[in-house]
Image (tube, one colour):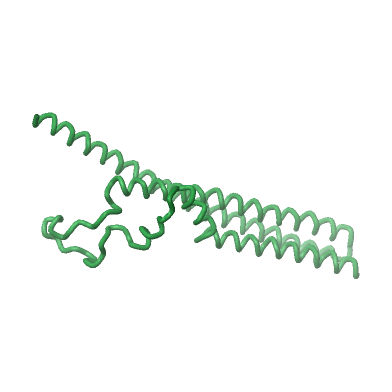
Length: 192
């Protein structure tokens, strides 16, 4: 009977070890998706501002040629607005994948017991406990943010938060700026 019990304990420790390795892999994936989100955001902001600067330079340089100015401005600013929309879509995709990794991570934390009560200092061979008033290993805010019933609800509730909110607002402002400049160029060209 002792051999069977040892075999079960070994299987459980292997499963916990596999779960922990999976947890580390998911955490790594989470970081990669957040990095991709930030890279998409930076690249699109640079692209849109470079095109915007080029368009403003072209409009100023060729302000005497109304037809060229209107054509270049229309094409450039419309493409820039489209790039802003593509940026939001790319950032949304990366952020959604980031949030999905967070939900997988949360499930694995429950399996590993990381979301449960914190072990006492005596459980750690007499080492002094850090932050002794904390009831859990994970931050309370982190645990409270997971009140949704499903992963899909968590993703939906958090898509408009954090760095994705910054990306959406920034791209919205840049798209609006392009639209305003396009209208301004058209009005100035008609008046001139």
